[in-house]
Image (cartoon, rainbow, N blue to C red; front, side, top):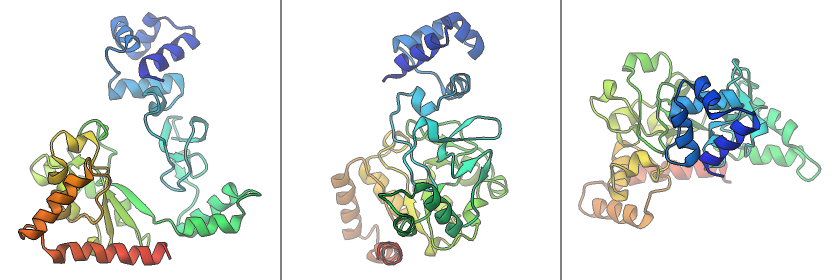
Length: 294
């Protein structure tokens, strides 16, 4: 279902006129009309207001363009299983069993697995099988250096945080420095101009990737390179090369795999990227496969 139809059905389902909805959202009736005609889509802040007003996720408001997955246990998420913040706001990142009222239900990986096994076990999938499956999943912290202070959705635009390095270290970077054992870090398409001095997304920024704690031993994964935050400014080849040069090990979903492969191959052949650089990433990937895929 398209956004225009979702908003129309939610509004009429509440028995609200376009004028009444506009008043609650601090917009004009014409703006609501344009949404419902499919001429425009509400901006990020208005989507948040709509989410609260109708008690649905932003993903639902946008017509469910992506399958939400709990970032802790990996369970596919439906509207009814989404978690809540203390103020009642919907959190699309976690299921309600892993995260509720601003708190996680566990404090380490073993407790997470025990907690999930208890809730996921069934006659067809005994607790022992659930535990074995979860123990083989690689914990991944994301999205570095943190989406919390950004207004943009990197699926559609480059996200930007204007915090300084000191400010990031005092808040957003803290979870990435936690002692969680062997893990991966996913780098987001987030620019930090007050840290780097430019608008390069973290995925392609050696300066920002270097801030990942113990980066030499951490598997560093890019967010999808097919997202608009990247494709609007970089070719598949440019994005792949710059991500490797920045220090990323796994390049997730290049917009064109053949173009990305060709660019990296050429860069290695002409010496722009050394074989030793690729070997470092390959060795990390093999180490993690041995640990989690054996």
